[in-house]
Image 1 (cartoon, rainbow, N blue to C red):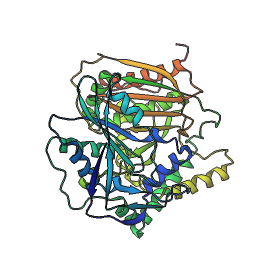
Image 2 (image 1 turned 90 degrees about the horizontal axis):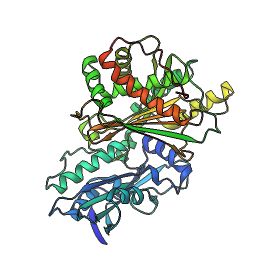
Image 3 (image 1 turned 120 degrees about the horizontal axis):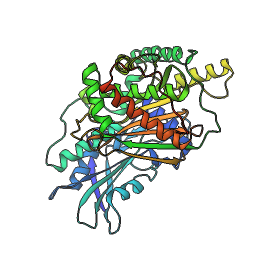
Length: 440
């Protein structure tokens, strides 16, 4: 165990939490102290001769969020955060004899942080039985979303390779972000965003939440070179993005699984538009809502519609979450619902890069269906679709509640890939007739 010192240029300051942090807190607070499954966790191979301890000290110095504590973690609202100027962080060395580095990081990284008293990050030097060495890291979701984790990993890789970090003088900080959100300009912007949420949530085409008793979930996961290559080809042809292709495929799934000709979904907006925001190790992501008509459209047209909608996502993706919670409660009471109104699906594209795959189409397909208990996760949706990276490929997760059996979920994810892939050879094919038959 080595204690690594750090000293930042700013510190010993206290400020409000950001809207994104409050949204995260509302999600993880009911699970405390078992919220470690939301932690960002990673491992990075250490090149020979690299100075791991100096790299840890450097990132702790540069990124304020890693040296932040939250004094009011017993409250319903997080409220405040305190940035410390200097301190020490312990970095142990772990010797593994009979397990992989990946399995160690997965278990070790899910330990809950005491964010009132301790740093919201931990690091370790891990040596495996075959002699390989990695830097393992885990960070609380309060101070790093998926793209914040990516920024931290990039910084570590640069430092371990002997390069320095982005020298920008105007780094984003959580305390500074919260101060901006308290200003009149962003208050007005938040109000407009919530009003747009009201229009979507109050529309007759949008759906009521899943029954409260649906606490048993099933997950299917597919790693598909076919889907990756097809998404790239369709994106190029439609002048859209691969993210829009996957969003369109999710909309088709929602339409098929609900029997409706439209899809009302929530997604997640990164809120990272500038170089400084991309380099920020913190939490900026917030949900946004969208509706897509499927009807008799071909897949290309759905992709184009998804792309157009996503270009307007910034209008509903940055807001005070408590204003949105109040709106949903008002709609619940007015409509006499048992739960807050929400959309049927959460679509989350968590890929941090857009790499091109050289894999052969159709090669290496792998699908897995299993039960998963997501009661603690508190999903208010019937369906959850996530796109992750698997090397240069896309790994597609579909999670659905108990109203769909395991075979239906397997068929759903196969249908997802079929919709994307068939869009290459049959761009004018209508997708309205897609059906999911659990007896297949």
